[in-house]
Image (cartoon, rainbow, N blue to C red; front, top):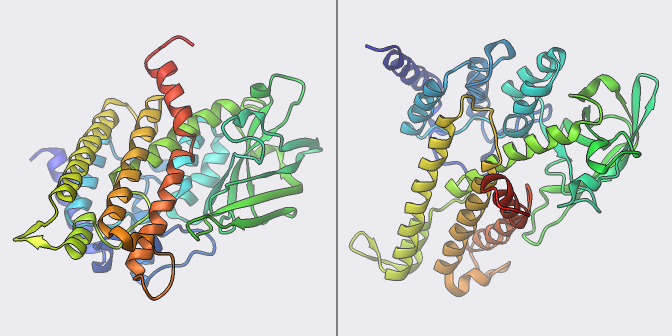
Length: 396
């Protein structure tokens, strides 16, 4: 028996012993475990599943063991994902620390910063948010104006951010600040970490057209942050910002695999419920064709992502190719909800009232939310520019 076969058997046995029954069901968006100082859990087994996986380091299976990660090779991680999929095990933790901050901390952080923050990310002890976009700096992110002025061993930070996902629930923020106003805009930006409970930090949720409020306006009024919290070199934060955006785009691309906001019903279930069946097939030929095409595209996309991952030396590696995945994953997720809405017909027009079920209202709101996928993490137009210039090498 090879070492990889032994690892598979041990992993299968460990998952069988440690993954609770309720964590072997398809989650909805309401079931997501974000961790953090004020974490809430859908049930006690969600907490025990996170604790078990965090202690094992398998919330971040390829991260170094010395920082609490699993230390697995890419091949071992593939086995782990396969065995989790085989029992329909849920991901134990949803975390911007895992999908965005952790990889750049491992690459650019000091040893002290890694020891301080990485283990807490792995165990889900701190919930992070991202301080990038500003009211006047969205696609032109480098024009950001949130300022940081040196005051002894600290910075005094003033300004605001917008579209800060879940800032009202976050414990810490990774934030872009302007530390030099006398150089070209890309060259005067730094990347800093600080506690959201710091004096002078306030947040205000933004209500979206979907009715949800996952985003916030975030304000900084003389927020005092130690200079040691800068990650990487002062005024070189744009380098880190670009790398983190690549990781964020990889995360968003997962929505094209059905990894976006959770739905309580699959396309197939919804179609059979609303359109009926012929034998065991969906009765409507056109809808059946749309669903089949989407499933084939999703499978091809998953295989492409897997191939790209296996071609990299490290799971934390990101490149401009992430823009391709982000763009395609965005379109895939939007098509998913368009099909769901098509199935509902006129019942997809409901917003509230007795004439529409919770399922119908939920689908309509999720469809509206999916439109934002083409904006967050860099607009689709920006992704196409990146693909043209940095992937295809086309001239300006």
